[in-house]
Amino acid sequence: METLDAIILGIIQGLTEFLPVSSSGHLELGKAILGDNSVPEESLLFTVVLHFATALSTIVIFRKDILEILRGLFQFKWNEETQFSLKIIISMLPAVFIGLFFEEQLESFFGGNVRFVGFMLIITAVLLYFADKAKDTDKKVTFKNALIVGVSQAIAMLPGISRSGATISTSVLLGVDKTKAARFSFLMVVPLIFGKIAKDLVGGELNFNSDHNVAMGAGFIAAFVAGLVACTWMIQLVKKSKLSYFSIYCLVVGIIAIAYGYLA
Image (cartoon, rainbow, N blue to C red; front, side):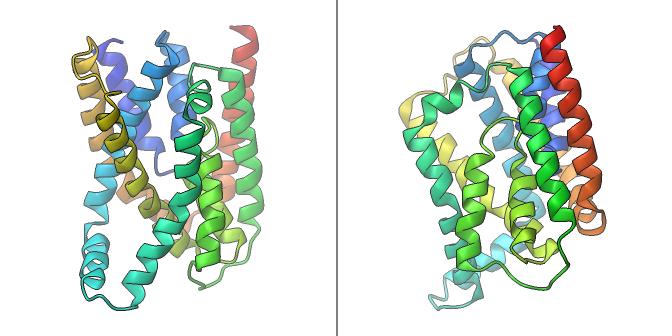
């Protein structure tokens, strides 16, 4: 992997992580276009590194929210912060289950299968379309909602299914306020990413002596910086804009990806 390619992929990750357009799907498309010939394990490793970078940018943007949650937890009371943290934990369970018991099967999807990504993007487009038709409310995420949204997040581990798109759309279809849905969506993934990194570190799957370390480092920095800019912008965009715009985008890119997959 060339350093320039890694930077380009890092920017793609940073820009698409917070939009409901599937950052993993765009990474797979980017790798295919740039001619990345990494085996599935290496490809997934680079994807995890870039997601780690955007997780850090999420923490920076939501630092006040996270500090408030931590302060509430240390009060050791059944307060709003404690309940929110428990909802985050509940939302993680489906993805943790998939990650622990179906990791090898999941890795096989990260090998540049452009046609598969295209079909998943079309599914994302359909989901966003129906979510756009949902009525606006002021409801919060409930414990039941958290579990259902967690299932959506687990499914969105497939490249082409937008994680933020799936979780925000599911929340909105369940009657949750769009702003609250976006906040929950962005915060619920942070513990999962750090958990994945910790698991790989303990298991020795992250080989820091790899020949691609420089490229991965460049991609990490690019994703982090792009994520800082994109997160601030995209949060406002999700609040004010219609999901139908992203639905159209995913549909167009999905069709192009499928055509590219058959013609390439």
